Length: 94
Image 1 (cartoon, one colour):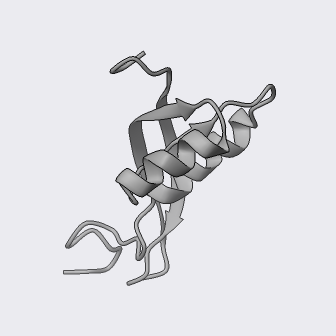
Image 2 (tube, one colour):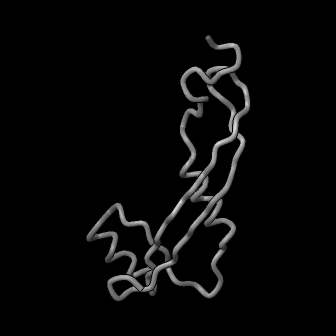
């Protein structure tokens, strides 16, 4: 628990294939994501937190959490909007 509240810690390490928006070639991107999500007791507690801080990212405690969906969401949020090889990394680029 942090500051007296329970949290869910996610530590995600993965390699994903992306398509370069410059050359349309494929390349891999290594992801190393650490996320700490506070866990609210119910929707009312979450609403209070959001009133204090509209940017708060938290979960509501539920009997069953969709962990796979949560991990997928964190991975999608970490991906670049326009993935590209590093400068000079596109095949055939001088």
